[in-house]
Length: 269
Image (cartoon, rainbow, N blue to C red; front, side, top):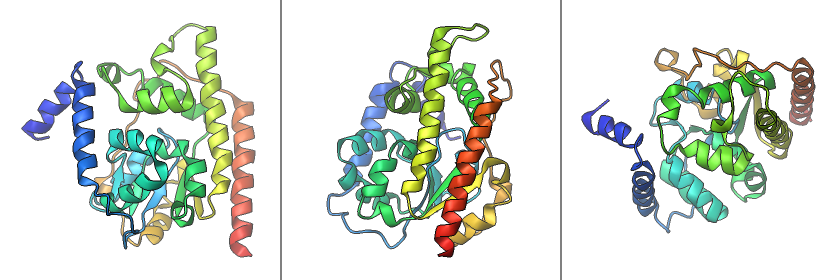
């Protein structure tokens, strides 16, 4: 990490974080030219499963010039919400990636499936059992290192605005209505998103436990070789909270198997 990166990392833990992100977002948007309305020669493959489904690992398996995780994060939320149709194309051209892995896309299935360009692109969705996913999400956003940030982009723009939960309100070691509400909303969002992925016609499904073994499939989609030796992932080493719901996991498995079977039949026809 360079000196400037260290300074920035320190500042985004302070009350200056929001103004810094605002300035950074404006600078990025100033570089995305209005004339960038035609589709770039490089058509991006989007991994659109929510945060904590292996998106960091998948992006890190390829060189950063062709694959990225959550690029231009803050500017994307601000602009996609104000004018999705126009900004999507400009953003695609500006980044010019072969693979993007961003959990934020899980909140825009309807927009992607109806966009004149996005609807024809290739997509990847990584399946993770709901019990494991809820456990990972709640623990990760309440890690001491995460709580140091006074302004966290996914917390403010995804979890609060798209999912409808403030993960920092979760109370560990207690059984409360607030905790149950957070868990319920997470599950509701997760199941709804998973079902909606059927709206995207060019979808590749991968189970999280098979993500590494499925890299050749991803390689074929983007026509690049993975470099697994450079990969990394954001793992929760400590789990003060564990959620377990076997019935929900079985329901999710049936849902995902149905989605995979329907997609396979469609591809075979």
